Image (cartoon, rainbow, N blue to C red; front, side, top):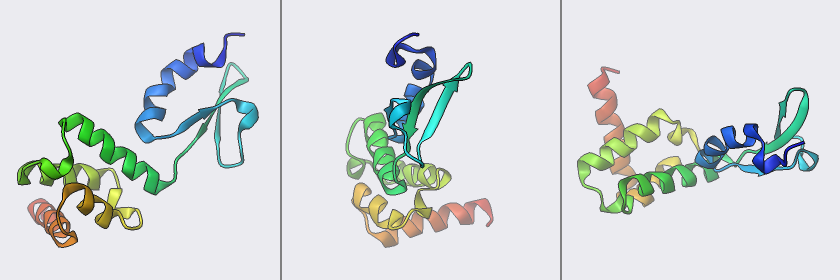
Length: 125
């Protein structure tokens, strides 16, 4: 059998696993909450999903990499775009999500709520 790290299934899922901040493990190390992925009936790898709060931190870090600078250094329009993206990804359903995002953006919670309200008003909600 191919080494798990070189297995085509691992190669295929690694970008997704990295994007959500999950961890790859050997299937023998899987715990009850881990997701074991099989290939042709054989367990190949286990994915340990991050806690939601860790996922938010990971998403924020990825957004900083994408923008090429700390989110707090973005202009207002870019920050509003970040908030829209985070809302679409469910970031504000995480406990303390607004506070975490506000800290990353260098704005107050009130400002994040204003961005959210402005977006929802534009959608006619």
